[in-house]
Picture (cartoon, rainbow, N blue to C red):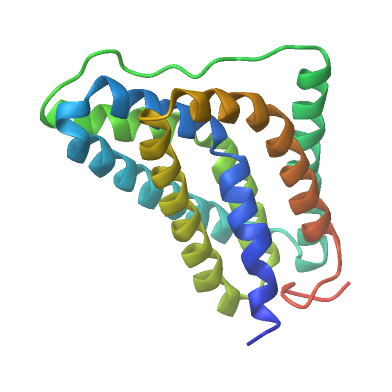
Length: 199
């Protein structure tokens, strides 16, 4: 069991690193809809479960890839991290986009669809991680991501009442996210105890 727990830091790190932009989006939506935060959070929960479900399904399709090559999927988060660092150096940033003023039930749907649409990088990285690990590690990865999502929601709610914190997140996210993705990529490429096969 302790060997399987090795997957917790890279799984949680992968989720957090690929959702820094969603953290900002969620904080903005919570601030814009202070009277209806439950619907925003409901949309967030739907987006988290949908993203994890999609990642799991994509990982299942990796069965068509010979198992000895699955570790090479680590190149994906590694490249995404390197691209993030390159954008940081060249000062090229893209701001997330969200629905402007939805309300009522549509607010839940708008939040969910916005965050899901903004989570393609999460799907790519998590599906690579899931495909490279033994099946018994899958629940640990999913629980790690759900825990990370809870931390993300708590940070967004806290940032709403502390504008300086939100600014700090905006400053640190472009630096931390690429570094975490590179670490996750190296973990997938490495021969670890949670790998589907040893290379």
